[in-house]
Amino acid sequence: MAGYNRGGAGMGGMQNLMKQAQKMQEEMAQTEKLLEEWEIVGTSGGEAVVVYMNAKKIIDGIEIDKSVIDPDDDELLEDLVMAAILDGYKKADAVYEEKMGKYNMGGLGGLL
Image (cartoon, rainbow, N blue to C red):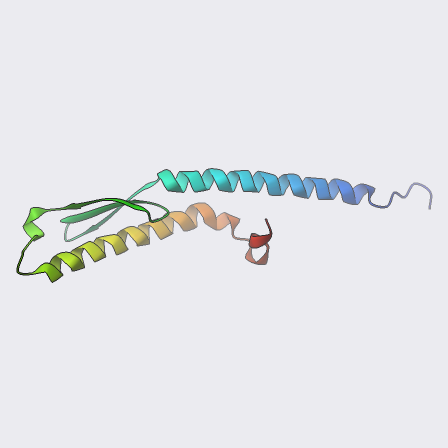
């Protein structure tokens, strides 16, 4: 078989695949950094409780309006804080899915 080079075309394809994988890893790293810097604001009680976090759900601040601080009803404040955190988590999930969803390749995701 004159002119047939075993592995010649295959090697080029493999190199191209490796370059694509490396590019995807670099893009994922940039997106991960973006998610760490993205500010998410979760609220409850008409913004009586505000929770600040990034899109990776790392909370870095909470603000509580004094009007919802009642020493005789600590459960209300606890519920408002939890609701604000859950609101932030929901928003963070949406951002994470929007930014990272394109990298979810089913069974191949863990290979790259």
